[in-house]
Length: 172
Image 1 (cartoon, helix red, strand yellow):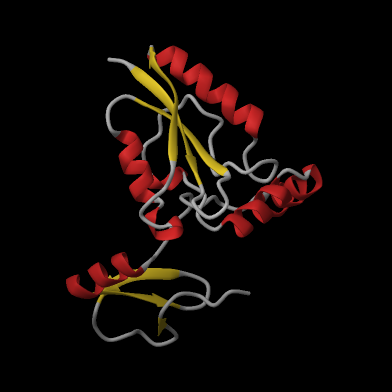
Image 2 (cartoon, helix red, strand yellow):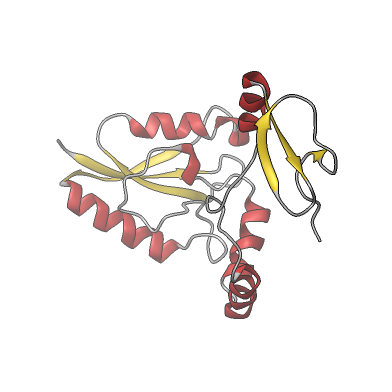
């Protein structure tokens, strides 16, 4: 299948804001994706067509590098190109906030401080979490947590023994 590399332009300024590669009608979906921000008529140019997938990926990557992504250029591409991503998750929407985040994260001192702050703490999916879903399941199945401020236990609902209270130990 023949691939092509394309560019999208802001209708208000004429500035290029996206470089992409595709085969088929992906350019249409990309233009549709930006309609809320730029309106329904987003100008585009097919820069080169009749390429192999590898050639298109190389050209897309070279153009993105030459033109520049935020914060160093006008492109809103998050990836350096050639990746073939097609989901909304890789698009910069809030440009100012994304530029500020990228600027902070490009500073080695900031990155070192963040790493030091996280040192020894469980990651987002590590450790035991007792969230709303599990809490709801426990309630439906007739369980509850009790504590004596040292130990916590998951028990069947019923009378709470003396010296214990419902809940988890308080943070010290």
